[in-house]
Structure formats: structure tokens, C-alpha cells
Image 1 (cartoon, rainbow, N blue to C red):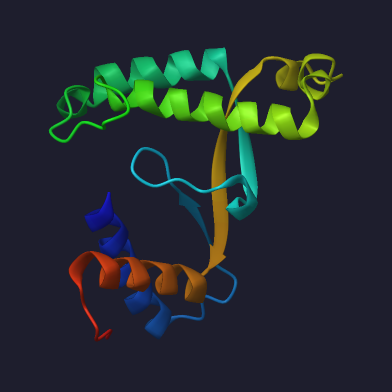
Image 2 (tube, rainbow, N blue to C red):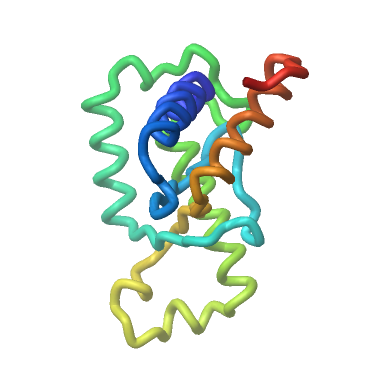
Length: 147
């Protein structure tokens, strides 16, 4: 994921040199290795059990090389989709604590009543995204000079 982030950042950097990207917004997603705290999230996507089942089926049938992770997490010995769902449930529990269980279970919206997980996203403009990617690169690679 780190290498993909850096490749995307390089592409956005080049694109930004050629085009006005002031209108562009990038949604940052963290999950297994890094996570947004609730206070950092700009967008929260509710996840139902049905959505979790679809994601698990997709993961297990389409990402065969990822089922048995080369670098498993200390939190769960199993497929990353299971760890993702565990994290989503924990994030939903944080929202339940903040908003109260009744907000979810007595909500007029049937979709919100069915929610069992939450995905946290952070919306960034190009400058913010490139700064985040550069800081992460500096911390990971020990670089003191940035292009």
C-alpha cells in the first residue's frame, strides 16, 4: 500500500504541474496498517453486514494472493478482509459510544439500523495529499530532502 501511495503521489505531482487541480479532492483511506482516528475523519461510510459479506466474498475470490498475507498483522492471523471488518466494527462501536446506541437501532433510516461497521475516510486537497505522502516517505525512508 505504501508503494502504491507513493506512485499515486508522484502521478498527482506530475499531473498538478500540467493542470490546475485546485478542484480535485482525494479520499484517503487507512485500514490494516494505519488508521484514522475518529477526529481525523471527514467522511464516514456506514457498512452493513450484507456489505461485509459481499466484500469478504470479493476478497476471497478475486484477491487470491492476498488471502494468505506475506506480512500478516499481529492483530489477526487470517485474511486481511477479516481484519478490515474487525476494524470497521470497532470504528462503529466508537460511533455508538459517541452518538448512543439508540441513534443506530431506532433510526428512521433502515440502512442505518442495519449498520454494523464504519469506514473512516479523510478528504484532502492536492497540496495536503502530497504533503502527507511526502511526510510518510520521509519517515519511512529517512529522507531529509524532498523533491
